[in-house]
Image (cartoon, rainbow, N blue to C red; front, side):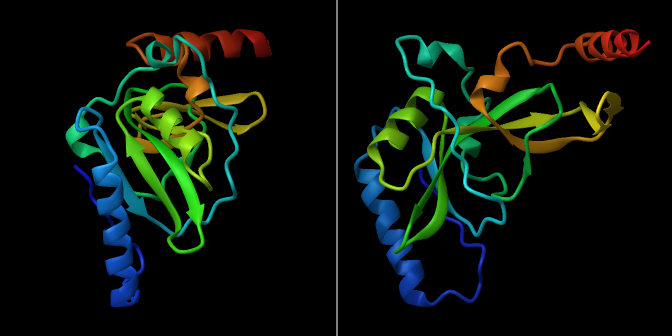
Length: 183
């Protein structure tokens, strides 16, 4: 299942057809057991170069996406980092830049699939993870922590997932610890 989205409406028909042809090429090269998606995007943030985590346990280190039927349907432009806690892993993303296609990302259900793709693809960056936060911690200034009750989507480095799953009391415990440390 691959979906392609264009963020610029003024792209010529040949660009759209080229992107769709490219998408079909990846469809043929992808195992049907590995759900993926492609989304074209014009990014306003800088280049990501996260260290990749390779190893025998890479597929078990990180949780899989909560709903593979929604891969690639989330907005390309999201927050980047922050929040200290996450509620759901939505997808793993590999951002790629190639002159013919420009900048786009490909979405994966698992970290291991994203790493394999990143290492086999010219112009690919290390995988990042898109997470949903129902509540999160904001740090408006160094040492000041505020609980925010707004849902948001943000891209994280996969390494940040370890120990960051929000529970009913985890966020409050974190804030209490930080408050005690300031006194």
